[in-house]
Length: 207
Image (tube, rainbow, N blue to C red):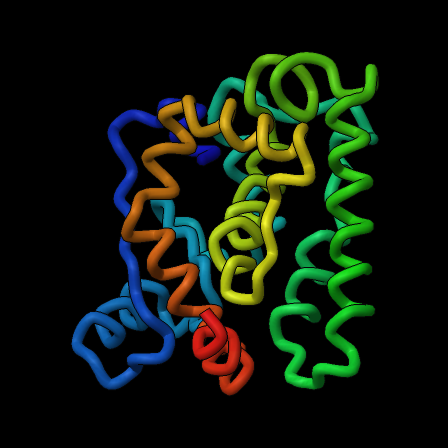
């Protein structure tokens, strides 16, 4: 999303690999390109040593290419900070006795985000105005996991009006549409099915 928002020219290349399929030629090609880096994502740029830390990649891209997408709104920068961790705990839980507590914790994070998006501290369409910025590039992928994979455990976002509207507005931007294609959404769902194990099978059997 960052590279698309910055309209990097010449166009950058994306190389998709499945870390669960390390016996494939494509994975071998990736390892060669990344000089042995195995943690995704990996950024390759000129003579730069391959970079595999998401925060460092974000900082590097914003400092290297114009315009800057930084936000001075600290509350926007921290919006949804604990959302993904609460979501992951809920999704990976296989103990029915803990499920309600973990679901409540996730709903609290969604409620906090919903309230922030409805507040004067979040001006415009997105977290900090009418243009997508770094906080959005950080939060939107996490929200897409919640939206797409959460359905595997009966989680719906419809009760969080402003979160839903935020996603709808973001989906009108090419940087979002070109990033979260139907293929990517299928990969998100498939990846969480594997992480959930028996829990996923149980949810599916009840549908």
